[in-house]
Length: 430
Ligand code: KE4
Image 1 (cartoon, helix red, strand yellow):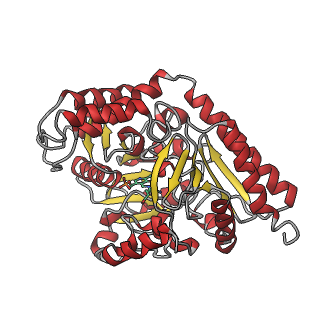
Image 2 (cartoon, helix red, strand yellow; image 1 turned 90 degrees about the horizontal axis):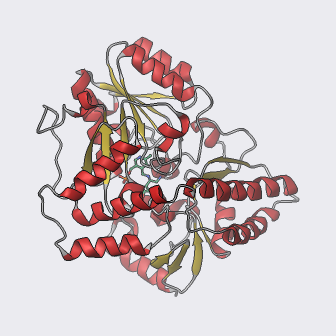
């Protein structure tokens, strides 16, 4: 028995599913997950001594690659001065000023510990600011596991085939209205139905939890117009896209400015750190300034803040890093598109910058319904082939490939060989 198998059996005795987060259990690909011992740059090493090119990147944070020396040093230096004070520190100010200066919507910023906490808090602030209860989210978008958002979430929940989570009271779910991604009419209908009851609309400006689904031209602009028209707060959930699509995230990339933004992943440099931000008049509602309560023992943790500051400083100091991510993303997309054409495979590939997904379907994937038309059995076979070729991708059709600045053209070339091995098996079956 391999080491990962042994560790997994031991883990399952003490942890639900043997994991700390469901998607890591590899349930939708029917495999034992590799237990990871170490990672460096674009590579990840498992307990059985296998090396992989990593396109998960801890689900987004590792945009600079794993164990970036400057980030590791910053964490160690901070930790040597104490790992947590539960008191104000200068580092928090520096990080919040960096986020404010990078993102047009972020006039004020509150640091928290996870994307879920950032989204939960942003929605509470929007409800406090508007005095309204309902929110709009999109089918297939995932915004963390706060009760009111586990309503037809995508990502792990969709993969696990649980459209709604047990344990969420109907009363909570009823306050969440579901629209269809890339369909402004479905949003308009909800606003017309509940004209003065909707506190906020939350959207992944590039959906990456039903696989990667870009916004069609005019979609984000339309959301901006409708939320303004009906007095609802527009929240961009940039937990994935923040500091990834550009140094100003998706709001800079598409030039659509929301009222509030949630951040996570990259701003913590791989440490547990997230944030919600927005217009001053909304953020001033948050305690201790206003009546919207939100708190956290480890919020603004000095070691996590040091990792975040260093990561953003490095991104800011490498102005060509986003061109590099775009170039590598285009190379990888060309590999997929070329091989899909060469073997006549029923598959499509969506990409925005360094976020990319292949879907085993022959329709354009532009929303939850079309994403869900993918052949999950085919994905399973493709996934297994890629893993055995040493390519570490998300164990789910409904996730993204994440490219980092540590990946090289040679890594993409090696990945292309693995994709060819995986796809060519269907060349006669298409
Ligand atoms: P966390 O609570 O996992 O830090 O963030 C929740 C979240 C919020 N918003 C968006 C757009 C997100 O993608 C996420 C979390 N992303 C998933 C991957 N699709 C995290 C992986 C996991 O659940 O283990």
